[in-house]
Length: 172
Image (cartoon, rainbow, N blue to C red; front, top):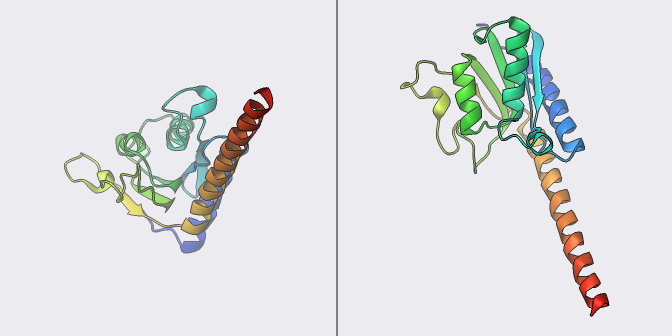
């Protein structure tokens, strides 16, 4: 499999960031993913866990499912995945099981990432498939979209607490 140029890597990561923006716009944690085959995006996904109330509705899973449908195969052997945040254990397992040979990700996830932060599942030779990992692709942008989202959530929570306290004072 041919190595992608920096320009191609950034182009596809921007597409993943666009998917992350879709998640953020509806109040989901803004994580996005795309899968590329022969230079074309064949799978897209963004987090929908809260809206679907489904624990597996992660960006990577959704992108894998769409790519499987497009290629009419569970094997994604000639593909690259781009995801804005280092994958969790579930998503890393899905990447291994779908035989994706290359992963490109943006920001690290020190709390749940298993592509170098907590573990290194994708390169573990005990599995029947290993994945070539390229990290920190547009990491600043990927990290900022998450920071802005959580800053907004914290501000909303603070405002709700303040309003509840004011209501209690008014009722007393």
